Length: 307
Image 1: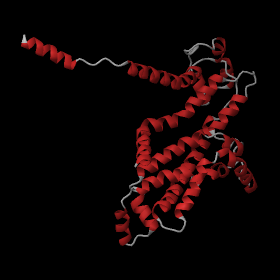
Image 2: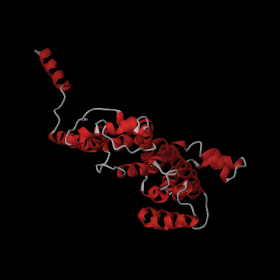
Image 3: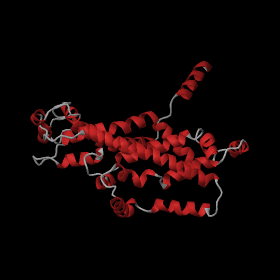
């Protein structure tokens, strides 16, 4: 009798408690939120894997209509115009590799410049002592409250007066040096570095720049990498400024090229299948970055923001 009671009590202890109604509702809400977020991505994939004619005939279908991979071949320049038209495409060509090269050039230059110069400025605000340092930093951070559209026209007029329109220099100039967010982000990390390391380097005869290059940078790779990834994604997806300044095909970036490709449809209806295939291909670099380094980015943002 005692053994049966002990067995029943042990079964009761190992019995999992039933989830409460609040938890069930929370799971449902989270599942719906995930569905709402992922559905547009699925719609892009579904459109890219469909043929243009059958897609227009069955626009409400949730699955690919007339499954095909020819749209990706069209984007990559592997299909001639006659074959593209026969498959239901518009016949318009997109010089994908040229625009991809332009996007890579612009993005890498902005990532390098903004990361390097923002690190220098952040170190100055965090460690160097000069008059009105904190006041200057506060005024500089006020730029975070200014919408980018406010400075768009002045920047455009300046670039045009300098003769930098339709050049890579004109596209990268406004964001090459630094940004308020980047400086604030790195400054928070630099403030947490042990000052004894810098004092030891100073006793060895290193100056401010030597301390920065030999001490600060080697131990600051996580936040620098995080800033580089965030800058990469932002620059890669930017559209309005490259559209205004870089209209020439030789410097046209991929986001602008996709918008122009959408408008160049002689039949009237946009070539949605080709456009969505090009969109998927253009998203691959950022997806790879987040798959490989996404966890590190989140951890570094949390560490820097709450230290």
